[in-house]
Length: 87
Image 1 (cartoon, helix red, strand yellow):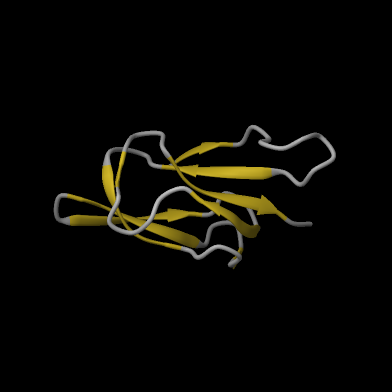
Image 2 (tube, rainbow, N blue to C red; image 1 turned 90 degrees about the vertical axis):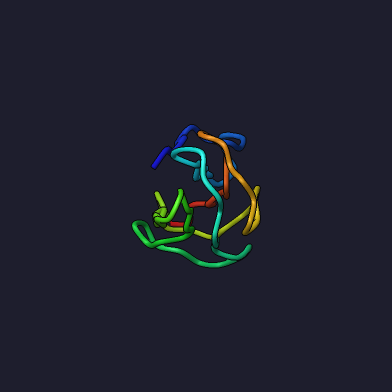
């Protein structure tokens, strides 16, 4: 799992975590915009050849943005979704 934990927002804004594709694959499913997630929860599934791999949330929070949809071919390092951390 490739995760870029660098803050995406201004210092006083909530911290956001990007969930990125760990390799070239097809996005099978992803959490919906606005879904509440907890750290370690499966939030997306990608497929490579005949196997599927679950991607886990790097933080607890809310899905703040979707950058890909089911069926998309995603590249290594491509952002799939963004989690806005909540306290």
